[in-house]
Amino acid sequence: MPNHVFPSLRYRDAEAAADWLEEAFGLELVASHENEDGSIGHVEMRWGDSTIMFGEENERAIERFGEHAGQAWLYVSVEDPDEHYARARAAGAEIVMELTDLDYGSRDYSARDPEGNLWSFGTYDPISG
Image 1 (cartoon, rainbow, N blue to C red):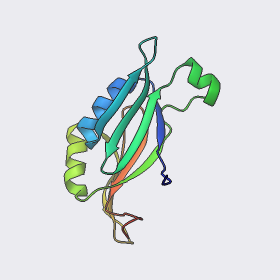
Image 2 (image 1 turned 120 degrees about the horizontal axis):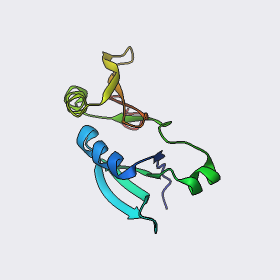
Image 3 (image 1 turned 90 degrees about the horizontal axis):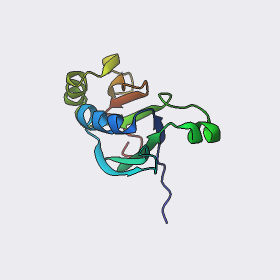
Image 4 (image 1 turned 30 degrees about the vertical axis):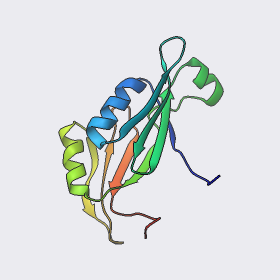
């Protein structure tokens, strides 16, 4: 079996987060599973060949892992950062770093999702070089 890394986040409202991530950043919903109490226990969203996972921060998760909603930082490679930036801005993303051409050749911007997680998007791709 190949080795993979799957970022895992927590949201206070996972259903709203999935909807927003799809609208603002273009992630694709793959799966969503409810807990017995109706809360969202597990969501998978895809970006190209990558998958992120998240669920709702509830008492059980807090007891086990501590409070982590809104504390993630992610970097996502995109082909057209200008188009992606425009989409995110139109959806109301809080832009914390405007589109910037960086010294090492990447064109990036950074935005916070509604719960505070920091998402950076740009042309840098450490796998493709």
